[in-house]
Length: 93
Image (cartoon, rainbow, N blue to C red; front, top):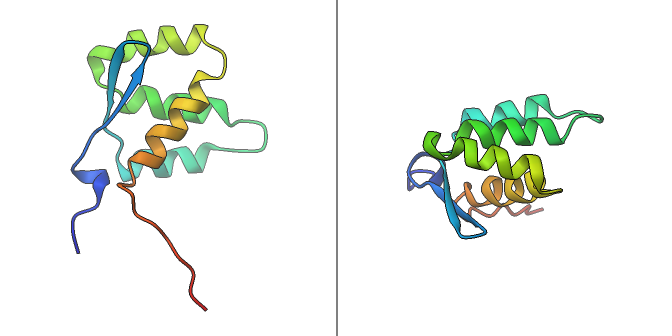
């Protein structure tokens, strides 16, 4: 089996005219899942993005997340899904 995308390929998301590079790990994904609750969904996603974005781009990303409504969840969704490397899961009975 090929190595999982989480460990080999960064995720690049273009916001406006800037390419942001994220390098999420399995641990980042697990931490996100462990911190999501009925009344806390955005903050765990924001933390995930802040932890996984290239360190040199963090302040620019934080500024965007602080000023653009809904951006956190939209970017999180893209990064989290893309980091799986296109792996699909199928239930067979």
